[in-house]
Length: 218
Image 1 (tube, rainbow, N blue to C red):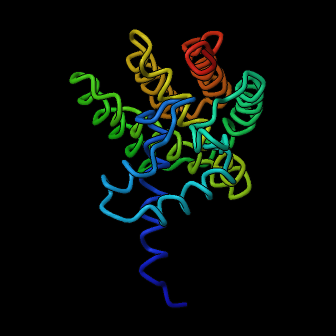
Image 2: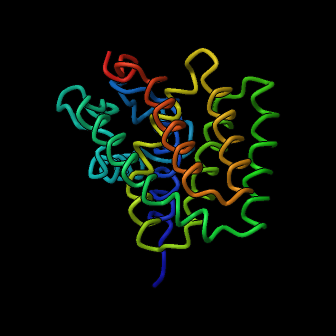
């Protein structure tokens, strides 16, 4: 199917604005100025508005009539549901990952931690969140279960938002990296029980860094 220029601009605007939201360049509750975004991306306001309509369907922005579009605030029950679901899914995945992960996949995870550590030294939150997200993507792919990976992918947006928030807590990314290192070390032993314990502990640590979700809800 032929892709028209207008469609390409809409997709470009969609990806750009979505990344700005997920990485907290635009924070929850913040008004979105279509004109400013259009000028920054060197396009008309039409593809920007079309992108915002897609993001509204994805529950990342909301139209508040006279105020226009704003970044939607997560509700506390959404965040609680997310962590509860993640705990169940991580517990399910741990034995699959321990049984199915390859040496190359372990090496990829180890490389991710090493590269992320370099960004940690420079306090580069944006890249740290990207590496954090990629670490979990690599980890969950190692379960070699399409259905499980599909379930985890459905939580990607809220996961990225929460990682971006937790990373800004004092020592937040250092704690996350320590958890990743423990996961990699445990994977080398293929100990499913220990891996489950480490993954759940890592998840609960992330929840604690978002304590009371005040930064999200305030």
